Length: 522
Ligand code: 5FX
Image (cartoon, rainbow, N blue to C red):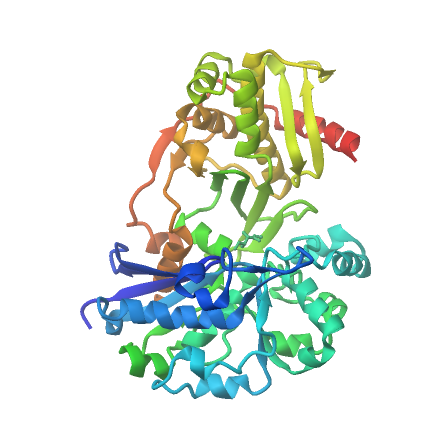
């Protein structure tokens, strides 16, 4: 075969997407199916059903299957599937799929004359998959933490304290409320490994990175934690299968796709992973690098070698290097809070806000502000707090101090929590910035100064899907090259700000002030 291509699939909350790259990593094809509009019969809003209690959130499992039928039908006239040597994919993290007793047999003998949707119409023991937006399992979470010795103990093992959206509490809910359905379940997949199973025509293993979002995987042993399994449900190890490194080659594509779409029978299926890990791959995050997404809320991902899980944030096994880790931190007070200060201190104008950042001094003459306009999750606190250069709390700042304080405070918090999770800045560390506020050069200058590292901007609109096409190539090469070697020819990032070397920030001081704030708030 002369021409090689790689496919990445993304089973996200609102759509299923596919993207093809050639051997030079250039994107050649893209297509998507939107759940709400392309599959109106499932009556979803934003791809989900929010139940009457407002806490339970699910998505119809068969909708995802039907979306794949539609997507492949859409692509087949313009794309030659026989060129695909490997494919991989991603799914929204934490969501779970329950295969009914006997489903494996069906999966192994799919008939290409029918759609996947028809073939698998009775394959699931639970028709509505719980997804990451569900928050109905608080009591189960608290019990789970208690039974392993507290939230920090659970985080030490699994990378996170118990979260409602994480899969263990969702499995426990099914086990406790519908024991017959649980017993009638042959296999439990994550959204990612469920999607991989469709292509494999067999149950696909859960990968270590997405598996870290379950409160079940011992992230150091890379095996299910006996203690966590026992607090969740009986016979769970068998229903989960054995977890594998995220770059694993799971086998060749099911004959269903060879017959129906003309795939090459040798096309490899590389383990699918979660959307955040896949984004890390798509952004080509390397050792010592961080990605900051500056949106309504801010998300922060980092490469970790020696993780120190905390009760805030998450540690996952790294999707591109099974011996490393990644950190994920979410901040509710992102743009919402920046905009509030822009309105009160910069005449509602981003250009005025930028002007202030341009002509005020880095370090803000020792003034630090911590603005949790809405209840923050990292850390769990609310309220606005201002400190002078002697660490004394003050009632107000001047407008100029306030503007600099909100931006410096938000970035100091990110660096402080990153270091808390075990992150250390290396000599070649990069900060990759995305999201709305990454278009503002003055904000990015503060980011470069606080991290003491160059800031690059990148377009992440397709990063999870693209990351999986890259991962497909990495997996196809089967360890012959590292992920960074495989992706070295991808388009370079754009340098947006270089750090001002005359400036240093006292991260430990910020930590002490945040501790004051949290003790007041709780
Ligand atoms: C991460 O922990 C999340 O819950 C979300 O980012 C989901 O992965 C979105 F799909």
